[in-house]
Image (tube, rainbow over all chains, first blue to last red):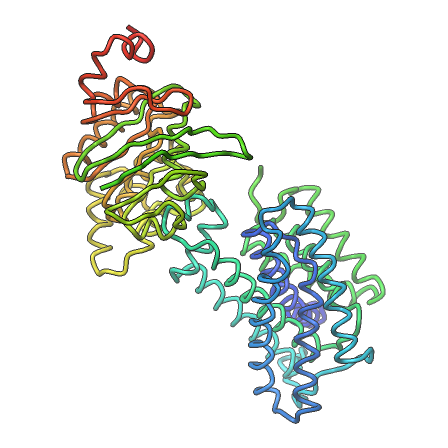
Length: 287
Length: 233
C-alpha cells in the first residue's frame, strides 16, 4: 500500500510539474496585468507541436528542438502582448477577456492548420526505467520532474534576485509607485509574456513527451492551470507551486486507487474541500 | 531648476488644473498649499509623469519634460514620495529601499542604504519585515527614505502628513527639515498649511485649480486672507 502511494506520488509529481509551469505562467500574467490569459494552454500545445515537428519532420535531436521551441515561445509571447493585449491595456477588463477568448480560438485554429488533427507524441528516446525498492520511475518522468524543478527555481531566482524581477514584482504590487521608482512599465508586460509563454511551451513539450498532444488538450490544461491558481491562492507564486503539486498528486492517487475516469472529479472535489476551509486558497492571503 | 508654465491637467475631459505656473530653484523648499481638490496633487502628478499635461509646459534643468514618460522623468532626477505612502506591501523594508535605487548603477547604493538606516533607525529594526505590516508613520519614513535612495536632484512630497496622528506628523516634518538641511531641493504639497509654511522658503496658494497667491512662506503665513482661510485664525 505504502509503495503504491509512493509510486503514485512520483507519477503525480510529473503531471504536477506541468500544472505548476502552466499556473506560474498564468499567475504572472494575471498578477501583473490582470488578464485571464485563456490562450495559454493552446500556446503551450503550439510549443509541443512545434517540438514534435522539429524532431520528426526536420530530424533535429530533441535537445536541439527544445531550445528552439522555447525561443519560439518567447517570440510568440512578445507578439501576443504587442498585437493582442497591448491595444486593450487601458480599456475595460471585458475587452481583454474577449481578446483572450478570441486568441484561444485563433491559436487552436493555427495549431490545426499547421500540425493537423492527429494525436502526436514527441519521440524522446528515453525508455529506461529506474527501480528503487518497489518503486519504478521511468527515465522520462524523472527528467520531466527535474526540468520542472529547474525551471521553477530559475524563475524564482529571476523574480527574487534580479533587478528586472524586482521591477516585475513592484509593478504587480503598485504600478504607480513602480513608475516613481523609474521602472519602464511598458517593457514589463513584454518580459512577463515572454517568460510566461516560455514556461507554457516547456509545459506543452512535457505533455507531448509524457502523454500526447491533440486538439482541445490545451483548453483542458488552462482550466487546470486556473484551478491550481485558485487552489494555491491567486497571485501567490508559492501557492501556484504547492497547488500544482497537490493537484498532480491527487489526480495520480485517484487514478491509481479509484479510477482514471474519475481522476478529474476527485481532484476538483479536493479543490472544493480546500476552498471550503480556506477560501483564499492554500497560500493565498485572506482579504 | 524646475519651471512649470501655464500647466493644464484634465481627467476624462474635465480640466482640474487651469494654467498653473510655478518655479523651484536649486536648494529651495517650495510648498503648494490649499484646500482639498485645489489641484496641488494633480500638478505634482503631471510633473512626475503620472498624469499627462493637457496643456502648458514643464522644464527641468532646461530640458522639456512635459511629454516625457514617468521613468524618464525619474532618470532626469525627479522623484516623488507619493500620497498615501504607496510602499510595496509584500516586499520587505530593505527590498523597498533597493527599489528606490532602481535607476542607479553606481557602487554606492549599499552605503546609501546604510545611511538611510542610520537616518531612520526604525527601518533598520524592521528591515526584514513586509512593508505592508508597518504602521502608517513607519511607512511614511520608508516612503521618504525610498525616494531619497534615488539621490534625486529634486524630491516631491505629496501630502506626507495625510492620515497620520499629530505626534507622527511632527516627526515627519522634523524629518523633512533634516532633508532640507541636507540641501535637497523640495517641492511639497500639504494640506496642513501651518506646518508646510513653517518649513518652506516660498509657497503657492491654490484655489480651484489656480494659483491665487504666491510669495515667501513667512509672508503667506502672516497674510490675513491665508490666516483666515487656511490657518484657522
